[in-house]
Amino acid sequence: MKKESRTAFVNRIMGLSFKSTQGKYSYCNDTKKQVLFSLNSANGNVILSPAWSKKGYAHSLKHINKIKNDGYELLIFKTSVKKNKKGETVADGFSPVIERRQLVIEKDIFKAVPLDVFQPDEIPEDNENIYEGAMKTIKVNAYERDIKARNICLEHFGYLCKVCEFDFEKVYGERGKNFIHVHHIIPLSEIKSEYKLDPIKDLIPVCPNCHAMLHRYRNTILPQELKVILTQKIR
Image (cartoon, rainbow, N blue to C red; front, side, top):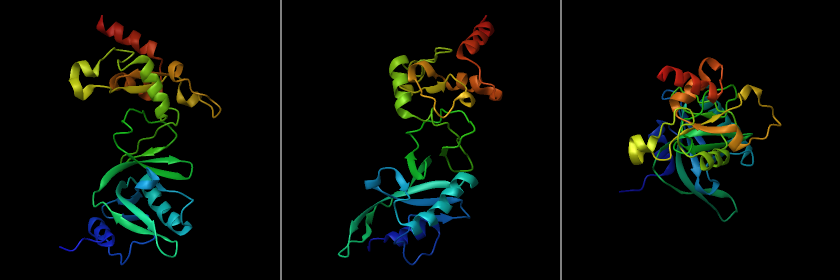
């Protein structure tokens, strides 16, 4: 059986009719509301950078906006490239496996991050940084999005909810091990651009229920306040 070409693969998956996919980073199906990016493994999770071809960047930026603004689903397939005899970068194989990813924006660089890297533990806020397809948008403040800060917080406090003391591993076993949300104690609306995050003083682990209650009605309360409410209800 003849090996399927990259162009044939993209056309089949996305329902398109390209004669060639050379020079393109992304492909869009408006009926399915899906955007497919080719992800060069050498670029990590970066799917679009202004350092690349301006023509390709401008073309794919339109697709990025559909993910951001119109709820399009972000899909990727992994590719590799090489230099031809002219020194030009050309395609050099691909993996015919489609993955659903989350869009992460860092200034003018766009990344497609695996879904299990960013657990859905952030509460919607005003600054949009992470986007997920299927008509669902997750808005995350950059301070809560810092994986290093999250890790430092959890290394210090562990994985018990600091409000209700729920232990996911104890209840769910191996499946619940090392699962918890991380809450920013200072209301994000009060954080200024020059603010320097202290992962131990400013972040605490909380379960999803307590996290939602802390942020409910967009009137964020302190963990101590929620703990008092919980204690009173238990009595």
